Image 1 (tube, rainbow, N blue to C red):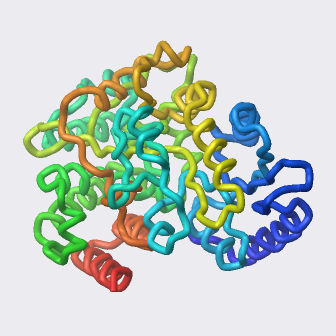
Image 2: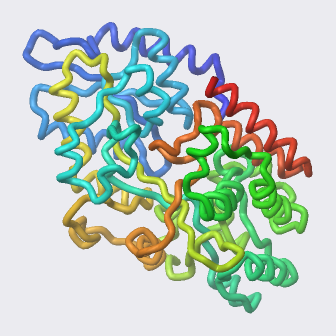
Length: 424
């Protein structure tokens, strides 16, 4: 999302005063304790209480380390980290950033590979050029299609397997007076979910190396197969399968509207599982974005915890804290229950985390553990399939533009231009 410059400037200025007082990131406080700055973010699920509790739990395993938590003022964590770096205040620890944005500039330290191999199911799941800058603690499906079983039953439809079936379901829902699809079009990342879904399923599903080939200049967004996939999204718009005012709906409101029965389906990252109403959870199901031939393609993103700054004055302390945070069962329990994260620690089942999850969570998690075609979720990967800096925002902008514009080739040409500019 676009950051409001004045807000960011005020926050950076305030941080400068805070760090000057606490010596954040410096070698210590004179008492044998080093103070490390930890950049986090907040959502309705991952609120201040979660972060404070998680820090307290990890700190028990990292004596001698004091954490000064700061919060990114928007969802653009990479942009905020860049502002801090430019002002000489790059944090010691950074939560859920895009490593490729910073590793190339030598700003991050990779984790010890032996430790990574020993603790995670997919040790190279978010590796960048063979090095792991964020422990692969969890994963997400981005997106899957969540649906309201009651509304499906009312329209006499079942979860579709193919794209043709999906369009038939949409048509029957609309004919029954039910809005087929919810869309939080007022927030760029939420607006992009249908486009991310069809591109990941159709383009990467047929060529998992497509992003690498785009880096090599062998393929383009203006290629016919990409345009065909994007036109599927346009058809959902032109057929009236989204509410006409969807571009004015904020992400948080889209959740409320979908869970409140205002629409039958919702393409969203699996973090939505944390928002499934507990008193009505059995009324919700999920299925993958349908493909033309019915093959199962899972847009998959391996996430994780925090990156470690190469600028930190206490690398040993930062590493100890980061490793402890990444393996703390309580942290993962909270992420599973409140943010729909799929845990990726070795040797553990859901029961080991003592979590209470819905059936739709278990069904979705099965797509992670089952043998199927898993591809990068375009625009959400943090590994070698991550798009160049700035391209995620361009993809989000294209999603919003294509809600009202039929110029598919023109929007794809803009992405190609932005890509080429970013990789010069």
